[in-house]
Length: 181
Image (cartoon, rainbow, N blue to C red; front, side, top):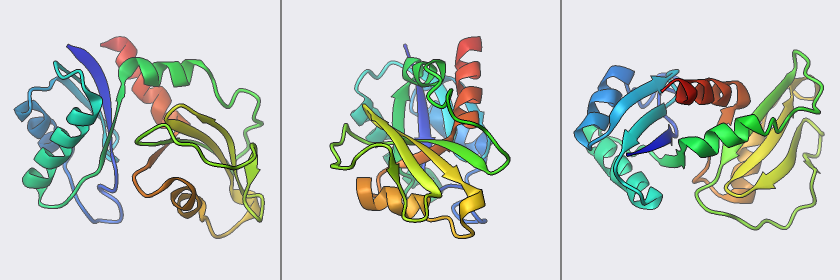
């Protein structure tokens, strides 16, 4: 059995595409998952399964969940060890944290080459990409510099729509759960 984390995109946002976590756990069991833990309501699932091919697993979960819930649910998969490594590497250790600073990891479906100079700053300097590493991006959002947050739109323009983003605090919680299983 391999330990994975599935990140679902676009569920339980603004009352749309509701997916109760208890129902999600039941549906994950139906495809052979074991030791299923859901974290928060935004679609973070820790589970064990025999499947070794991540792309096949993403597709299998996405197809099953669409049938179960009646709408497409994009899925990105990472091995549990990958999430633990991201957190253990402390990607934001040199960033001064204030009440307005938000730290994010954006997951990409594939290793992607984008021709931008790092660190990359948005026009108003409210959003920056500090590192692109394998299949994830490390980003900082400074709410003190903007009233309109366009970070996701910027990321989608640069990397496409098949991405999903999590706050580093969520990933720390996921990593802690992985360590306890």
